[in-house]
Length: 394
Ligand SMILES: Cc1ncc(COP(=O)(O)O)c(C=O)c1O
Image (cartoon, rainbow, N blue to C red):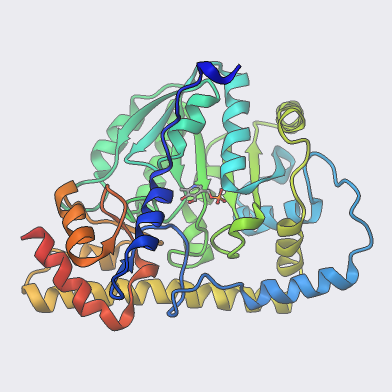
């Protein structure tokens, strides 16, 4: 049976983690793996999450099945968190899914049922997993211009011109906030223009919302998503609770669909549930119940928002420290873009040689496209890191 298989390519991030673990240098720095880390280099369990789990342990009465759409209270709470009052909920359906990845997968499957073989347009570059998920769902992938390697900002005019050329059979994958891998994001005024373009062309927005609250705050980060939903008739959103609730391994996310009216929402939702039933039947509950418990309790919610704010502000402050250390040493503003980026990542725009040099020469690890996880910047060694970056680009 299996003799016909050839080896699938290994995961590059996992390989990088292995190399980092094997590096004996005490000064090594891990800017590769995409998880938040605190000042001790630990990915912590949030206190609000711990408290929710304690309540769950004493209150839980059964572990019977929840149903294909998962935890209903979680669904209601996530819709409120993500959409607020941007859209009439009669047109909206939500299914809890295993992480942002599971949500992306079921929604891509749904789109392929609606428009078999349609093209999903992704930003250039995009999160590496978007492309295989789309392809394995039967969809084609094309790119639209996004990252300007000179300014390290968004090539907005080119992006908009490309979106304006799309049609009603196309799907546009947008990062709702905190673009991965670049860290370069749209302004509110640019979101307004993207929403207007989508309304003109009829292309379907597919929003990947994996970092809500990691950029400038929950409300600010939700701006683009809400703007689009209040402008266009149809959309899908893949929400992840991995980063903002620190629930990575619990696999909690949600597939949200917005249809033109309640009847179409019901029919489309029946297809979504049918896909889920045939894939994993039902999502795991633990992470979803944690999020429901937090969001529906005023005290826990306030505590979570505060903890999320601490993570967000730490990342912003590390961005500023790195940019200013490089400015002081080089007398140039060439790396100031790091301070202007938002979310967990920045794409530095270094050559593959420079990335290799940083790893071999300085023990500084990042993905081969030169994406850094700013949460991995060691505050006490920011000067050494700045020196290493400057050495690598000279
Ligand atoms: C852009 C983007 N989308 C989705 C995800 C999926 O996250 P998860 O499946 O862990 O919830 C990630 C995780 O790294 C991501 O960066």
